[in-house]
Image 1 (spheres, one colour):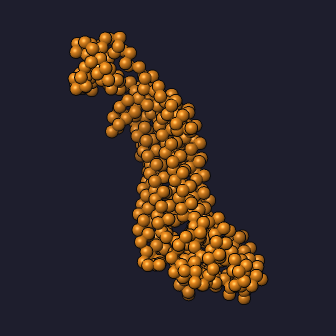
Image 2: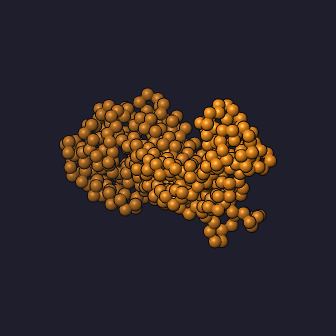
Length: 437
């Protein structure tokens, strides 16, 4: 992913230096297990750690040298093993005993996905803190609720923030489950039968790396795990977009109930100096499209030939870094945007009252039915007065009071009592208690 949409900590997970460090640890831990089983000399395992680990741990691995070897071998794992042999010496012959390339590649990918998930989980936790604070801040800021983009009935700005909180709380659980799903180790050798390596080696390496043992790995870890992981990232991205779209709509000039923070010196347009555009939320919307796009190839990777093929490999080399890097960036951007989002209570109140009381139409409808009027007739009475507000700019309560058919069932005092904004917010505390436990 390009630097514009990248953060260093996540990028580092997918760097060659980190990848080769994980590869080395997989091989070295396997050697320790093999030494305990008496398959290779303990002194060889010790030498491999002593001579190899400082190079990979320090990040001083010569990536260019490995790439040079690969140009000849046309095989990345063999190139890596050749490089390690150059550093370790004769004892390097005990590396990769009974293993196949997928044991290294798949187990490494599991570690990288686990590391990436840890960052994403932290990102969501930080977002939740901001959303909760903004929800409590605006719990009682009554605003217009909309369906189909049209004024419906009152809600509060706090409920909007609380709704995002509840969704990302679910996403937090999804990310934790996805992390567990993808964090498995395979050290089972060619076609996954352990013919040339003891299953206890796999158990040892898995424990050292903080992974679970893959119950049956063929020659690769089954890709339904990875599909679940990337689909989870796509769901999180869709939640990000939902929040971004809400901000974009609220910032429209005709609405302007909330606005992205516009910093001193910021410019909105190269042509129109007055512009203050929702660039952050629009950017997030675009990034969400990318992340969802990575889910489809991950799903298509599930169906591999027999015990293995490498049709998944090129896909994962791309979507692994890109999906996690972009999601990390998007979550951080959403957190910053929500943290500084400017809310305009006066504009909210103006919009709330802009339709002359139509937002109370359902309450009038229900009251008419409770007063003995059929639902069909009640609907007709309310709608014919509501249309005068839409088409002629009339005041809804005034029109209802002037309608003899309405006042047969409800007095003027009863009608006035129905136009109480607090009626719509009486259960906000209950909803907040549910969301924030």
